[in-house]
Each structure stands twice: as structure tokens, then as C-alpha cells.
Amino acid sequence: MSATSVPLSIYLHIPFCRIKCTYCAFNTYVNLEGLIEPFVAALAREIQIVGQAQPGQTVGTVYLGGGTPSILTPEQMDDILTAIRRNFKLLPDAEISIEANPSDLNAGYMKALREVGINRVSIGMQSANANELELFHRRHDNDATVRAVAAARQGGFTNLNLDLIYGIPHQTLDNWDNSLRQMLRLQPEHVSLYALGLEDGTPMKRWVATGRLPAPDDDLAADMYELATDVLGAAGYEQYEISNWAKPGYACRHNLQYWYNLPYPGLGPGAHGFAGGVRYSTVLSPQRYIQAMQTADDRYDYPRTPATDQAVVVDRQTEITDTLLMGLRLTREGIRREVFRQRFGDDVLDLYGSLIEKYVGYGLLYVDDDVVRLTRQGRLLSNMIFRELV
Ligand code: SF4
Image (cartoon, rainbow, N blue to C red):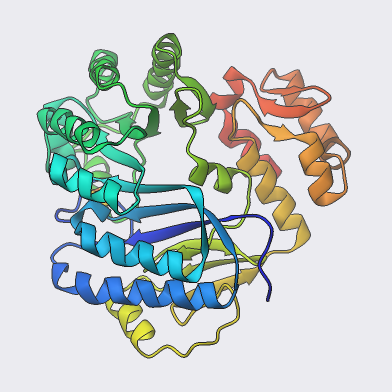
């Protein structure tokens, strides 16, 4: 197997948290800190296996997500990034991001992260309102977020994302407006806004099912989204994806790789990846993951490793559908017709002309000679279009 000319984006899943948030269904575990050290060694081993199966492969972005990567020490981060540098060609301008909990950050820690090469931090602010953070069982308040941002700046970070959640039970438009404005005072380069989802197995879903909390109000959530679109636009942020806004030049390059449907190996327990024409996932259990890596041979069929759980070879039609579903999320760029033509040999209108024309007629899609993309109204109803594409 030889390297591809497209630089990879590598996702690394860190499956540890100090507290489980009430809405979270990610593959993450509390009270397993004792596994962090062997986990870091296992992750370095998995990086080695994937890198050696694809010699000379360039990497343009690395993303440490989770879970709570900021539980790791700078030395452990360094071990992981050293494994990447040894086994891939990490490009000099690579974007290297971590997700972080505000409570974990201080200036010394952030400076140490910069020194090991991390250059982007995504802080889980989630809300500025105490009642919402308590409902989530987050282990920080808004003051901690303010201190975390200051620490990141003191540590030398010039590329910072803040996450917020809307559509929270009991949340009003005024509460949401407050979170947005508090967030803007911190002047992040990038903003991600997520509608609260009620995920299976979470306390939040149970509380709504048993009537302890009101069910989400979709109309109110849509109003919140509209408000955010106006407030962020007025503050100089460009919306470039359904849930993401950035100052010019600060779109997240790692996530763009997903939305372009380009290769991103996913490593670590519960990670998902798409590389070498294969879409796959990794075993969920950190213990099983560590064990698989401790007994791993050297040769595996890229991008598989001994921790691979499910793997499906992606056929052409699925790749086309995935490319459309992901690309339409890009609210500014949309689907670039020439790029699509070069990749698949067909114009997107030849393949999906009647469906696209229908939604253009409803005012939900925009088409010209260069692009197909969602309109502002289409962003609110994107799921309807995506369902029909599948
Ligand atoms: S910190 Fe993040 S990953 Fe961990 S439980 Fe909370 S939402 Fe989930």
C-alpha cells in the first residue's frame, strides 16, 4: 500500500473524563485514570502500525478529541505526537488541536502544550449560565471558562474555539443570548454551536422521558439558531458550516477534511475513521484496546489495526452520497461542482438534478455554475434534504 497525495487528518480518541456529563453519549469513561499511562503507549503503538502500513504518508492535521484530552499531561501529549512524527510526515504547518475542559487549563499547562506542538485548543464552554452548567453536571462555571481562555492566551494560543449548546430544557432566548454575548467577550477565533440532542442511555434523555424535564422545543431551538446566526455575523464571524463559525482564516482544517469526505484515520477506543476506501470503527473498551495493542503484530491491512471492530469497503455510490451529505453542510462553499466532477467523473446535477431542482424551488438550495449549497432557510431544514439524499 502506498501513500496517497492527499495529506491525512488523524483523529485520536482519548476516552477518559473526570465526570460524565448528563447529555453525553460519547465513548468515554470516568474513574479509569489508572489506564492512562498504558493507553498512551497503546495509542503510540497503533499510530506506528497505521504509519508503517502507509510509508511516507503526509499528515496535515491531528485532532485529540474525546473524552477529555486535557486530562493528559504535556509529556503524554508529547509521546503521542512524537509517535505521529516518527511514523508519518507531519507537515510543518500542520494544525494540531485538542479538546479541553476549562477546569484543566492554566497558563503553565497551556504553555507546555504549545511547546509540544499543539497549536489549536477547543474549550468546552457549553453555556455561560450556572443553572445550565449544573444541569449538565459540568465541572466548571463561567468564571472557569474565562480563566481558561486567559490561560490559553498566556500560553501562546492564537487559535481558540469555544463550544456552546442550545435547545437546553428551560433555556430561554435571553439565557441563550447571554451565553452568546459572554462567549463573544472572550474573542475566540472559532465558535461551534450544537443543538442539544437527547442521546440513548443518558440521564438527560431519561429525565425528559419521565417528565422531570420538558421536552426540547424545536421551534425555540430554531429561533436560537437564527439569533446566533445574526449575533455572530454582526460580530465578524463567517459561518462556514451548519454548526461552525470562524474569523477569516480560522476555519477548522481538521473538520474540513471530514466535510470534504477526505481520508481521516481514527485511532483510539471508539474512534471512527475513513481511509484507504474503508470506513471503520475501533473497539469501544479501553481495556480491550490496550490489550489488542500490547499483543499486536506489525503487519495489518491499512487502515485496519488489531483494534478495528467494524470495517466496510466504501463503494462509489456510497462515497458520492457521503460526499454530498458532508459537503452540503459547508454553508459557504457547498458542493464545488468542478471538484465533484474531477472526483467522480459526473456533474452533480446529472446525478441528482431533479432532487436539487425541487429544493431550489422550495428555496432551500442554491445552484449556479460552480456550486450547490444550502440557503439560510435550507440550513434549518437540512435534515429533510439529507434524508432524501440517502
Ligand atoms: S467532558 Fe465531554 S466527553 Fe466527557 S462526559 Fe462531558 S461532554 Fe462527554
